[in-house]
Length: 278
Length: 323
Image 1 (spheres, rainbow over the protein chains, first blue to last red):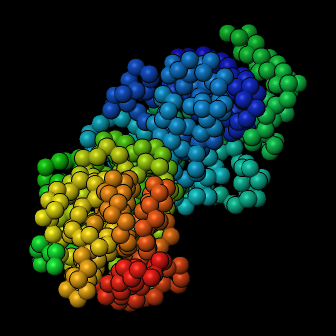
Image 2: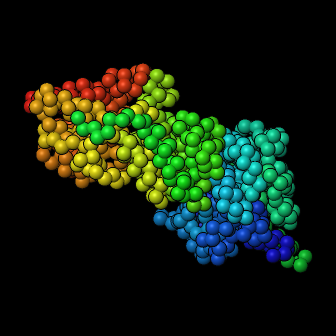
Image 3: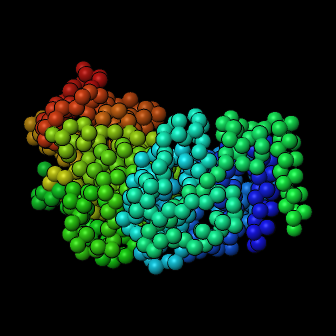
């Protein structure tokens, strides 16, 4: 897939995220818009996982630790063929498997997540088991910046470094906001890079909306032999919709009909611009 | 007395030996410890099977998360930690990473109940049955003796679903196997037959029931049935209802809070099935728990031969309708 195609997909994904959140009248809009480029790159450019190999023990593993941004994951999984996209019209409806967090009732999901600070330790277990069995697979997890306050993440970081799990890559969707406000005001996370490096991980930073740069970095993981990789992806909460960007209420805000139309028209303009460039 | 083998071996030692036997035959057996290798008597295991033991440090949340990750890759992961930490500090990881995600981890709660009696409530686990009974998709087992411990571990290893197994560190004999020579997770075992009352107990509270039954028979001419309800969840409903069917008193005994444990599970089952037998739950009351050795604490709260005998006499007295 070309970088141009990836960029087009990112915009299409944003439109779909909004469509299904709008339809369900529920969802984590801001976080889904901030992490969707990361998921786009992982599923379309990096990971060896698809509906065809999902039962193969040798597939790459992805666990979404920041489970609440599930709408972005649903849209990407549908696009790569795990289930029909129209299933998402049942999002958050009575008895729908498409609930507000990942569950294994949905094909393509590896683990049930939602509570924060759980993904990394599970991934460390996956990565260690793969090493024991000499399976040449990689394990990826997406962390939220707010959840970095969970002590279990730091326990898992010690663990992964101790066992030299260089087949493990954690990506931080660093949009710098959480439900109460800026991370810096809620509980300071900085200096993050130094902290993660001090825990024995190899760290790189990237613009979390630059699909080309992310693909390049992730396809060259591990960043350092014998160390787990930590990619700090600097993102913008609500990315792609001007009135949602960095505005706290969109953490789990649902657009009104007017806002929805406005958001779609903004994204369509972006799409046009990109297509013209082609 | 219903003791088949009077060699008193801690169930913990039996666990460790059984794990070695399993690991020898199955390379997918993986023990995960949280600086609990020594407490779990797993040092020989670690020496013999260094590739099958994973140390996570004093980090119980990671113990369970890591074990879930190993299990989801097909490993038979046994997460071993004192029951007090495993089922309290790591509870959210048990609930989400193990049971909700259906990763078939075997959670091994060592030195359970008041095994660490003198160390205080930080080290007691008197809540574990209660919390795990309320969580979907986990089997809860407390073997009463060496035989049940060995069998429970072997069977748990073969189960493709989450299991919590808890036991203590005090030497235990092997109880009578005359009536129920087999062990099966989910099926209670009759240790002693008797028609005047029934003790339904679990884990290390079964032995004092046996002792009480001895005294009742020798000194008071009362014959007590003793059931080892090793599987607290799912309950062997059939055996309990059958035990209640003669209308005689029922006493439950457990090394657990009287709230939310075996006793309340049995009471709920009986009441909802129309049984109104005289009934008493023996366990640890809702109070600041007394400290001392496990034996002393058991005695203090009446989980002893003498204490259970008195409870039984009280209930068997026709004029007493409540325990």
